Length: 112
Image (cartoon, rainbow, N blue to C red):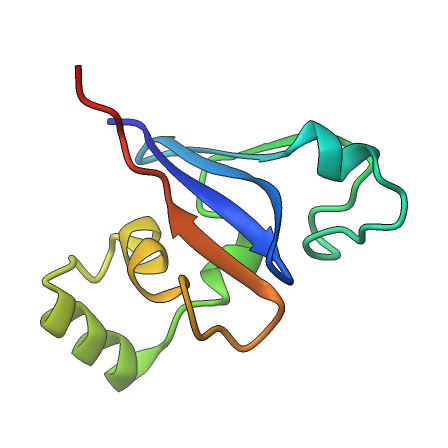
């Protein structure tokens, strides 16, 4: 099942993060953000030299936004999220109060 999230940097929509399946992730800068030279890259590992990046695992930059150890266990238990569902945990915890300038908002899937 494809899951999408919008990625914001300092409140400006910078791109979209897509989980196509368990082993396929895409990060794509929006056209507007990518073409504005004044706006910085989301991270050093996702420079604005390409508009789209693909990975077989959650990109390290986003993975590093997650808690570890006991905090992760507690979050997963309270939110009822599998501890190995890094993307699901990211969507649940990286919406509001993140350490850096980047936040991640789930995209509401439209029903037909």
